[in-house]
Length: 369
Ligand SMILES: [Zn+2]
Image 1 (cartoon, rainbow, N blue to C red):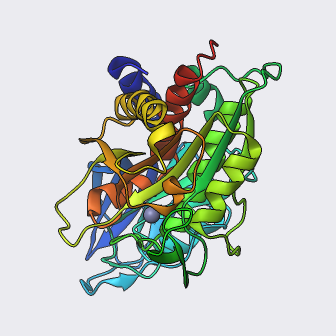
Image 2: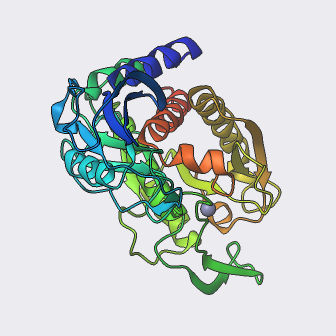
Image 3: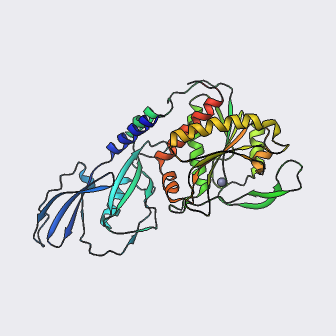
């Protein structure tokens, strides 16, 4: 996607945000606020008697979301409740009773039921002051057309014999049992580690990796590519060597490993793509893997607009060393960086990443739309 069309799409998405009107009683003055896209604008103010009903009619576009916030002189932050999984109307009611301002953002529903809340910012358990905004990303069937305009063609293509094995990194629980870092090696590593956790959202890397992998799968299948997943659920126990063997046994044209990064320095952000190199095990797949990594990386960076941390060779990863097919590992951002973490939690950003990664894979496989 070009920068321009990305911008246009974002503008379209913003245009979909419904206005929420909040009447805040401050002593004897009532102030009507219109909140759109996170910015609060004072529309109108009027003097009202303390005991009287609101003098200002709440002529909002969507009356179900019109609310009268209680007077709140307290500045003590309160806990944001769990909203993901609720219907938007229900979540909106809950938040507004608590004094928050709701900013709904529609996104294509995918498998989700229409109206269901898919993510929230701030996340559940975080503390925020009354009057602050809570963004709710919800499944909106009307958002499909907007997304499709900037995404890959939504048609189903005939099978083309190509196979991609996608490995959503990690799993619900780590397995610290050891396995050789490569075939016949005396050196061992943990079978599969726990992965990172979002510094702000507390999202887990294994869940994020799976969500992204499923989005990539769906996009590749539209082009007739057969996708083999190393896992489709969280509660599995599959080591990194075993994951490579799934790709080998599938005869995959590409083994795509999906991960998010983490660093003790919270300032570090951006995207990198890893490929196998530097030992005898991966010598046969090195050149093709680098070719795939380069094109996937370029498309991912272009689509996500994230900081570019480059394409990097790795000789120490079991999931590469056991592979006999071209392999790449995308590190889609740093869960240890607040901005990356928050972005990665949104369906809109995940879609952009999946678009870019899928486009890169298709380019590498020379599949023409
Ligand atoms: Zn990881």
